[in-house]
Length: 433
Ligand code: 4AD
Ligand code: MG
Picture 1 (cartoon, protein in one colour):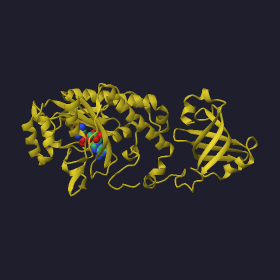
Picture 2 (cartoon, protein in one colour):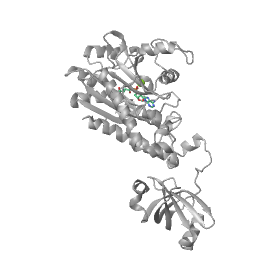
Picture 3 (cartoon, rainbow, N blue to C red):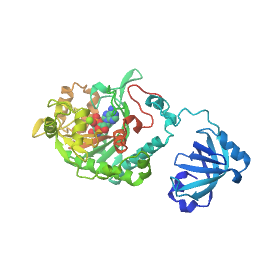
Picture 4 (cartoon, protein in one colour):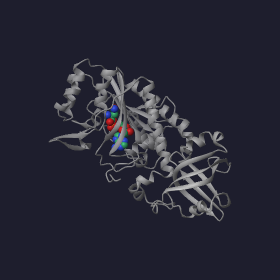
């Protein structure tokens, strides 16, 4: 029996004897009574051991069970309005499977470095439990959203011959006498996919050797990247706002308890509904020019974290900033016919200072123009031949975007730092455990 099943339908189990297989989360004792807080990975339940209701062996055992010992308990489910889940377990029997050594993570405050070095154990704690369950819900919602709309999931390779998002953040890997790079993005492969299947999405780990030591950057993060044939910039902007709103709604509906464990204020998330505000890069620059809280940037520069935060604070909804100067964006972006200095691209900036969660664009579909861009960006042509083929054989306008899963998790959970949004974070300074 899983604890989650009991909490979902307490009335079914009330008065019944159940067996829980789990670990000891915590213990309190007061003379003739022990309170064992047991977790099984799906939830937490308080078990009560009363001296004159169990054998003396079982009662005495409780004095010595250590935190995180694995155990199997039997007991009767009892309604209890004072208990956090609304019910408790009157324990009749306990079997210890392994008696845990003194557990390194206790109730006292630990430094973040210590906790990260013990991430394999830290994941068992209540707050991390809630965050990871919300992450799981977000992943399920992402797939449901695209599957329900007829997208085919088409995963991209991780070893790649070329750069998608600039050559400065590439991880190089030796490959049988050759060298390859860890994928920065599945996009180029998704483009091949949409020409074969109309609408596809990739969903997998992507890598950036980012030298940024910020609360928004990981070196390994998951990206979901839809790509649609015949779609233009406005089409994917609409898709992006519907997508993000859907995922937020799913989390609010299915993960109320977890949101309350991490004390997330749902009122702000409840407002996330389309349409989202849309401003051009130029309008964003004009907004920044009117204030003196954060540094100004030159036309042509990308926004940094302070500018993104300032811009996001001007709106209650995520804001979509479109048409950035082409020179600060990637080689594959189509230019605006109205002004060829601008790329037909969009970034979605989350609320509450969480920065960019989505980057997307319409793609250059003309062969000669794309060849020219590859030259201008100083990229080698040969590893891109297959990509250029997509422009040789039935090229069509097409567009897509990439959403960073951990940025979305960090925003929805309002985390201090992105490293808590992934089970085993990889940053510049950390690849253990
Ligand atoms: O804006 P980016 O670089 O766009 C691309 O990779 C495109 N090829 C996507 C596409 O059009 N298919 O990255 C997309 C998103 C960002 O908006 C951000 O959410 C996330 O990926 N991201 C990171 N997340 C964590 N750590 C990092 N170092 C990240 N870099 C990007
Ligand atoms: Mg970006």
